[in-house]
View (cartoon, each protein chain N blue to C red):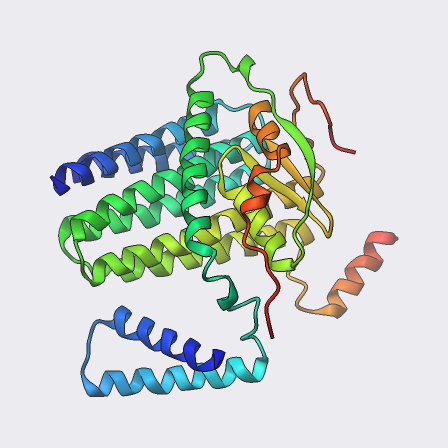
Length: 158
Length: 99
Length: 105
């Protein structure tokens, strides 16, 4: 089931990237998609982590949220850059707990922290994430745990 | 307007390049080169639409991927001293280090 | 109308890029500079690609611009994290502010 939908996705990618719809090129695409699927299946890499279909319902909301966060954080960092005299900045290193259950959820959380400017994930292990924050406000906002609630994190149903 | 955006991107690339040349640490240089690469992708994309040769977008796409892989590879090299492709040479190096 | 919107997006994107470029020269140490570089990697790239997307209209070019955006969206935080992690393991100490409450254990 997953393999078939992945194949359809790959074929759509091929067609859209090439932009030509002659029978020869489409059949070449079909052959390369089939080869890719065969190899990926043999390597056992099409699983719930590399191809997380079970998160699709949560993704649009998360995407809108992360875009909003990126814009807000960017404005903060730009203000910080343009401030006259560099005495204002006070970088912080904080340790945050990771409440996510799955590895994928943890990875998404760490990536979201890094994606919003002003905070960078420095270290990641099973239960804690170490974050370098540009300002005290940024660190406090992360400590409030607002972002970690929004992370799509649910176990794949087999 | 395309010209203004191109100039802005070029100025940013110049600033990144200056940071890459000035250092002070090797990580500063890698971060600057990463930024330079991202700006190159944007520059190619702007130029593709500016000149109407939109097949250049494929090149921008490939450049985005190569830039990422290149940065990771250079980081590996800086962090470990080699790419860990050959376990024997690694063992040898460890031995030399302990002597 | 769409033209004006796309020019505004492109202009703001370019301006953000230059500000980020200034930022990597004004900030005092490596970790803070990484934040400035992150600004130009995220919003600047998003705005410029969005502006170009409005210019391209609904076509294959817009799809390719979207793919570039997706790649940047996934690879730029990974590269930033790898850099920060490597620097921390390489023994580069971050310069901290006065009021560093919880601190690193």
